[in-house]
Image 1: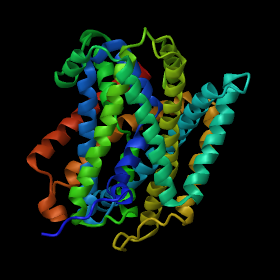
Image 2 (image 1 turned 90 degrees about the vertical axis):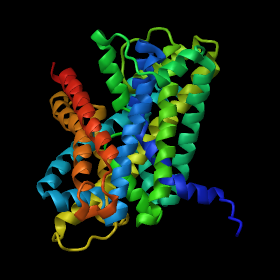
Image 3 (image 1 turned 30 degrees about the vertical axis):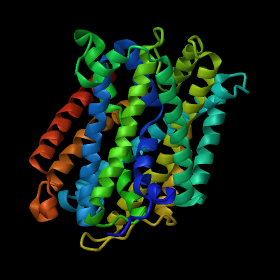
Length: 423
């Protein structure tokens, strides 16, 4: 029996690299704020919701990955080819709205967080805009000219910083470890008749990103995973990604539960308030500054991941739109104008959102956002449910059950989100 060679750091990165990108891109200021605010309101009894949310996102991404490795098509290609061209126009509308509002939110989050770290401007509003624009340009430069290997390294550094800081902080401020263990294992929702249900579902839905889960298929192509021999390694890759994401989300809930009542807020603003609250604990100023640096790692890695990955989706859409259905498609060319043009667009156009509030358009976007995850679950039920399309790799009964539960759960989450927007 031959001795197996030890896995080098580079080999390990190739195995879990796309998963690291999923985790880093899917965790942003909104996840930081939602986890902390939910923990502050409900305590550690809802930690189970973080685990369940990460598991459901794993199932969705596993189905996406399985479809691609079996058929050779990305999920977007499969949905448009098998379900009709109407899907492409619905998706394009969603993609454009998502890109604008999420791009603007990421710039704002980077700007607010960096201004808290380096308050060199008298006005926080000016600091948000200037730092937001600078971070967008930095992300554009890294994604456009740095290549995929540099992109992986920068993302890996950012996620290492944010996870180390969040988990260390949670370990230092957490005290009720028995309650934490119970909260992880036993599903309970405090204040069920009040805000408890809404915050618990929001915590579950916020784990691991939304549209960016589609980008995993393009990242595994970049690392040479093209057939079913990579199914097992990709499942391990995704398992590591969502386990890490679950630990991160749980850490934020624990941190929030240890804080005094937090003022209303959202996104990076609440993250800055949380850092200030940490300064009042036994961690002092060290806790505040370490947390701000970790938060910066979270929001910048999310921005960089979106800038690099979302253009894949537009370039893939454009290739399908410009070719006949029976024409074989090529992998997305990162040097082609559809990819690079969309990257420029997502890095520049959302800057308008730093100055203007499009409240009515945001409501339209809220409808698309609320429907995305249940639509993804439904597409996976259809595409991976036909033996003629995926053969022996079709959904197992347990997977069908989880996908149906995911569909219903995220429809409910979408209902709560729309009720908040229009209620």
